[in-house]
Length: 404
Image 1 (cartoon, one colour):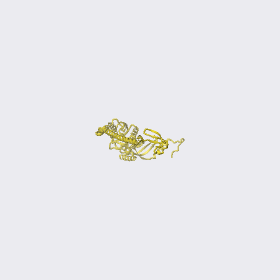
Image 2 (tube, helix red, strand yellow; image 1 turned 90 degrees about the vertical axis):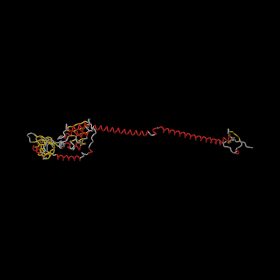
Image 3 (tube, helix red, strand yellow; image 1 turned 30 degrees about the vertical axis):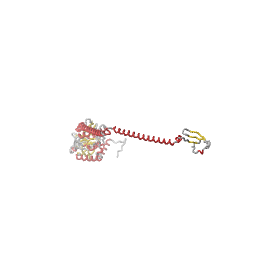
Image 4 (cartoon, one colour; image 1 turned 180 degrees about the horizontal axis):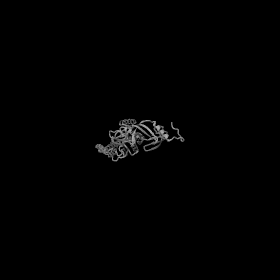
């Protein structure tokens, strides 16, 4: 039940503080896992002060314990150690702060870490973060490369020097961060976000030298792995040596066995590319030369043919043939015309011979009556009837007279 308070009836701070202390005390003793980030031993004091940090979220918890509790842990606890603490949360009323009073501390062993890493591996694999189809291809020749590594580390030297030895004009955007310890994950994630937001950066390399399983734990942290999976820029993992395999290798788009191997993967070798260009140029030249030789041989073969050796010869033959056909056509037409002319002459002679005019020229006459009908029988002529005589030389009028 909440307290019944109002503006007129407030409760004092001490009451609220004591109530908070009671509520916190109800949690009882619990086991808590975290990473030691600050460890303070004050001279002359048997109380140890340390901060326990959540390796996933940015949450920390002040812890106090006796020196005997800390010294009883094996192996020795130091900053960066992963521990499991048994104790009770307490609320210190005078200052209004919460702390954790530890009664027992145990260091998380390598075996336990490996078991938890395997569980995380299975979880991320089930979510598809390791799938090959989500991995992006590296650009052939990135103009600017983002590099996340330790400050002045050998990994930075290996990546930068080997990359520039292969391609001298390559540029780097370097982010120096802690690569181990309690703050490594947060720093790496922050640097990764800045490089991913920079549009000029075409590929990001996360590099560090080899180390123990504990040293490489930041590169198997779930927060970092999910940040890498969410990047739009291809990410190359170059952690440790050949035998080292943090979970970052499985989430990153490309895994390099060493920082030197990463340099070989992100930029091509200038000498190799020049040799490749020279080889392709020679191959192209040979192909073109072979094609020209083949076409020249084909052209020579074609021009050796008679029709192409003397192209006009065929035209001359066709011209002669055309002239012969024209002359033949003329002779045929002339023959037909001459025959037609002879036949016409014969027909004209026959027509003339059969013509009435020819008969008239022999002294005959054609007698027609006034209505134009030819008179064939004199018995039908009336006395004094007007008749017309058509002679060869002209026409004469006549009057019929009965024969006495």
